[in-house]
Image 1: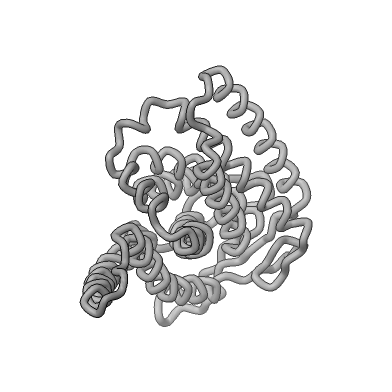
Image 2: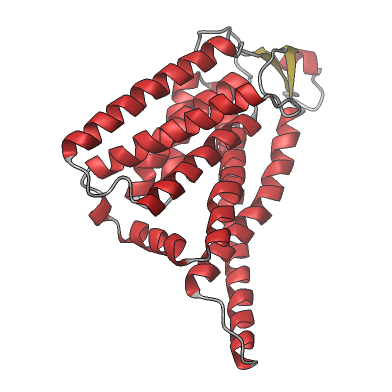
Length: 302
């Protein structure tokens, strides 16, 4: 198979650009929204109203920053799509197609990822090792429930899937096989969460989300799966279904959820035909796009 003929530095830059944009825009927008909300809270107190609590400010800043960066990532994602042409379509969940059955499989997959990941984390001795995770958890737990739900179940899946699967994984996939691209993108997905607890969980979840994206070739599909996983984690946190259980119970639940997850992913593998895609690239300004075509490997190949 012919790989897109770009030099290695060009490939690296192309893959890393979305991450650099994400970090820069998130930092600037978070700083700006933090200042604005702090001033607004002070003004409310000055006029006799209740100020905005610190947990709410943290969640609102995170959500607003994610929405801002999502707009930019969405533009990049759609520009990338122009470089690729589907030549063998299928009944996969494309950006314009949504069937109840397929959404059900994606939601089930997300919930199983959530159960397996949360029980794995509680089995490992990492919960007490990360102060930053405790801070994140406290911010979510102590903030307004509507703000927390919107931030974790709507905003986070959109921004993170656009960045990691829609751009970073997809660009890696232009040059590498699925396994390499999934491993690298899942590792980066873990790192951007900035603490070891969420990092481990995100790496495990990222592998499943990468498979979903690979199979459906749609960021919408991985967003649904991601949102379901976050909703499950939110529910587990409220109901305290994980903490306090015996080690044997944790292992049993984790094993059952893993087996069910594998079964669901296998069902998706069978039910959703692999979509064959041709990449149309201009190697130089004078080259014809027909000289820069690459076809995704056939089903079963990396």
